[in-house]
Image 1: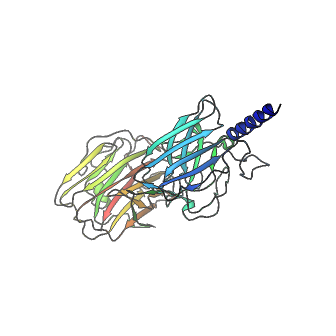
Image 2 (image 1 turned 90 degrees about the vertical axis):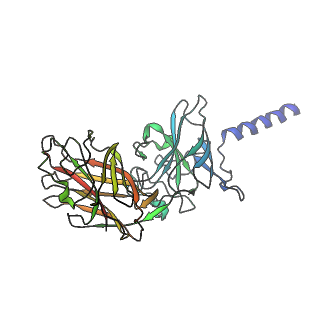
Image 3 (image 1 turned 135 degrees about the vertical axis):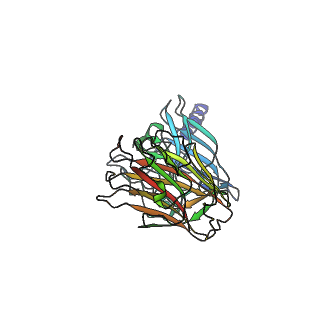
Length: 397
């Protein structure tokens, strides 16, 4: 009888250790090493018990990661999940839907599928191209909670820091790093914010403003989007400040000042990669989604003044109000621009909404590379007119 009782007690303890989430697990840095741990838990999120406390005996996971490095190196193990289900481990940047204040940050760390036992294992190295948290994250300045809809999970400690969630892959848009669904009872949430130093990530500080003249001054590059069949003599991109080189896309016929003849179909609300390069001499180019305009000419501005701006504007008084252009994820010579997102929306009337990021105190005399993403959202797409849909100018003053 005594042997049976001892065996029964041992089995009960062993089972409880497997079934109970590691609430007592050690969070944070492991001693003085470059390794840290954070635990994620299923939480009470359904009214009336929606206080975001940990569900006793619920699903849980442990993330082991490096505190600093050129890549985010991680190992994650989750338990008690739905079996044979796709999950994504994400950096959720407040506010909702998790892509930051200006919708320019957040990150997918990894995706995978749980096994038949409801366990998942994820490991690897990912280039986040950001510290955690990113400056565009509400938790970078610690406002004390997420003004999100739906749900408003409290901000854990320590702040500033970054939220790490395990969510259903079906509820996450990996391409745009944002949540598209909300089933929080099926997620795991961190019990402590984390920090990570991306050692090869750098930031160029800028200032955001509005109201510059429609005519850019000393414009070095221009990206002009048109729709319909453009008459080569009807629209002169040079009117936007003599930008050189220039690139026209979306069905328009480039005029004499446009250096690229290749075209592609511009998809509404889709982001496209662009790259503007200047070698510090007389050669410059701008590339959009693989379409490149290149110039070698003494007309190209020699950028020695040390000031640069990226100007975004909706153009043409015939354009429908509400037409929008967004530029995001800006990088200058490999360093991210902060803030790294600006947008312009066509208002009512004939006015043109103009916004810009200005970077000052830079030495651009040796040339530069500016990269980013650009998106156009027509309020009412047209097919017959040649009018410009928007203009993005890169000015060097």
